Length: 366
Image (cartoon, rainbow, N blue to C red; front, side, top):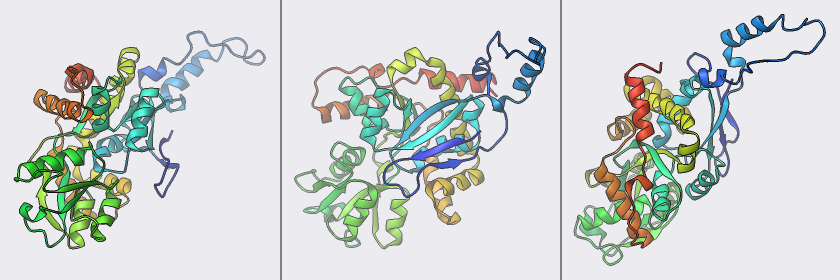
């Protein structure tokens, strides 16, 4: 049984299929699909003579049973998705009776698809916070990283924040994580955004680097691997965003409706995801191999550098502090220009992640 990584949109490859790693079969949720009173066609079967044999085959060869297809939307190939991809490659979702489809779509489309139920889960925690603050039925239920993976990359002539005065910096979009982080970094260095430094929405990071090369902008906040690629080209790393702020990078978003109506599906998905996070954090060599496949990078030294940059930012078990939750909600309220009081539970719900972590700790799920 294969787990699929299907991509739609502008990525160079489509409908890629990745074989599973590891071993093991479908867990008890899938076994429940076996009817209690199966019927067989008349003829040489002589009633239910072969029922014990059929059941034994199902028990000893569970991979013959259909797995539940679960769809997970991602906005790009990024290290923030690595624990999920590692869990897929190591067979952790298969062990939970799930056939995982990772689908590429823009952040906004992913949010819409999650709300509509076209995908059960997505890796869009930033846009999900903005939407949830406006009353959309979305919950962040798992966070991969709690420190930004962003460096402020500038033209070689920019040697300090003071040199940015009067210049233009690029951001992904207004109200995005890169926009919020850039504004905070500027203010903490005595510069007022939009007055001292202009901010321009450029789009995805490849477009931002192209704008930097063409000198349309003087700097941009980019994440791995684009920060390392830019430095290889001679651009300057002016600052690391993680020295200034905490934020959420990657994770799992779903709807309050799914959590209410299908709590078991959310629990199984997060058990596999948490196992992927722990494997990724604790086993560098195989994780770097998976990273090379996912990011389509062959340079092992470069991949090792990316892994070492990413690992310290990871959460312990998918949850974040109450203070960080409050900060993210306040940022989203400010961007949405809403005065409505927003409760934490309207945006975040880590109860399922906590339960998954507790079960794994107590050895109930192997």
